[in-house]
Amino acid sequence: MPIRMRTTNKIAIKMVYVIDEKNPATAWLEAAHLIVKRGDRNGDLKGEILDLIVEIKNPLEEDEKVDRSFKEYIGAKWIEKGADPVFPKNKENFLATSWSKNYWTRLTRFKDSINQLEFVENRLKTKPNSKQLFCAVFDPETDIQPKRPFNPRMPCLGALDFKSRNGKLSLFALFRSQDFGRKAYGNYIGLGKLLNEFCQKVGLDPGKIVCYSRSAHIRLKEYPKIQQMLSTLRPSR
Image (cartoon, rainbow, N blue to C red; front, side, top):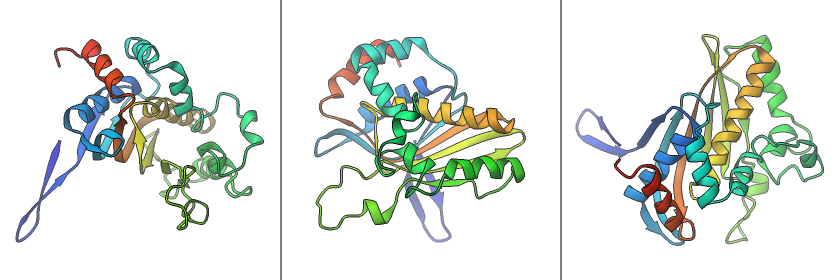
């Protein structure tokens, strides 16, 4: 949706797309629909929109219909591939990997020494209303490689920010790039599980998750499958 911003001497138009949904599944579904409807072609991206904000009110709520359809058309493995780097099913499997290879190791042992999630947990217990509950995933020393035309290991997730207000803990995630044809749905699920674990540890209720995607896109390969899904799940919308 376009947001119009007025200044003193002119009107500036800023296109920001906002999706407000109740759970990860419907949030992903509406985002995918928006990309198909409004997205532009960009290289191997069949549809891309810039500046997508997705708010998920109940990040632990499931939608069996959307979930079943995603597994049928796209594949269950892509849910795991999207969720596991954020919140692994088996955390022990990640201990042997390099700290820079996935979100989880960057969050729990950044440069093999800093556990950012542990810092957030401890700060929530001592100063719950802090504005410094921030975790960096992107590392310029590792991820910026000027001599390479493309760095496949540059993380799509750039940062996380937690906020505790009025007994609820909310989570903000910043993505430089997010693939809605494969991993975004799993990303949302993983973020919900991460938020829930924090809430259990510090005695807060889960709040909302807000994700900002600078580039929200669907690739050529998955585009026809996403279109088929949408025609089945929201034919009259």
